[in-house]
Image (cartoon, rainbow over all chains, first blue to last red; front, side):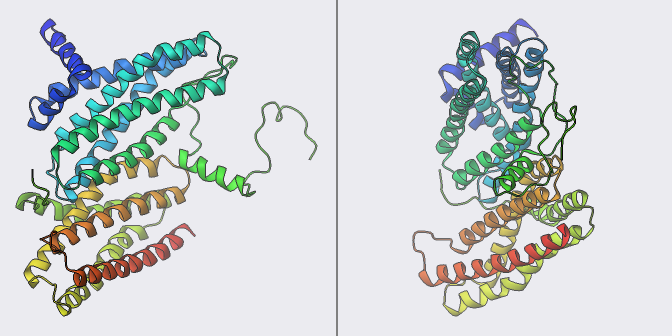
Length: 244
Length: 172
């Protein structure tokens, strides 16, 4: 990367943190969106790798690298699968169809959210330092990701509110639903990120055992007393002789 | 900035109508892939277009009877625009729907995802139709709105029933 390009990238990041209005204006005008998107994709990749490494450090070892690789994939994959929904739903209701601008907007919003997450990394590290119990660490992670999600959503909503085109509200609502569904499933498919410190073996991804929604459906059926298995797969149980 | 919906330009209109023709087949293909039945390939477009073909004349007749129908060419154009909106919306939803359906193990999940996608696209298409048929939102006509609401409920009800029968048959 040349020094000029690097400097331009840093200027864009500075703008993203301090003057998001200028970035919104650039996206609205359609100025050099490819360069903007490239910088924001790189920002997401690096920032989420840092956040993933911080999450992985709860267990330590190879899990740091695993989570650092997977977390950027989740966010970028979800963005690529979900961004066309914003354009399509808006266009269906009469908003001007601008796929590249919408993609740049979604990626920019996610880059801002990723930077918010990076700002929260010390909190994750504090949890690690205080040896916060696993479930409390999970709750803290959910809260931090929720905060970043709200920050990202605000960037999209503000940009579309200024546009004041028909169908904006439905487009944002549709994007949120699609993003939550796709992001939830992709994150589920690539789990785990946060692993108990006492875990002896860590895997890059769990074996394919259905989608998040299959699991939710199974949990709902189990809650109603409808079981599809004879017994739950407990560790060590298979190794022992079990009376029927 | 105007809050009046931008009309779908001629080029995008043709592309949108092409998407309307292709996306239900693609969604059917997705279900066929997941369930192992070929029936969804024809059934999805049949439910969508069959229901609309069967109920759309009723909307014009009822609207004309209460005196709120625009001229026939405008109604035809409104339907074409709404169909285009349906196709564009479904095109935007098909990628996430494909991911969700193909990454699930249970065919039921794929059916729920496909139902959600086609249902959301249908609602967006109907909303666009309502906008196109009421070009002056500042002076809404109660008679026309009532007719449209009843027609929408009937159309969605018929389509939902057909879709449910189709889903039960495919998942059986």
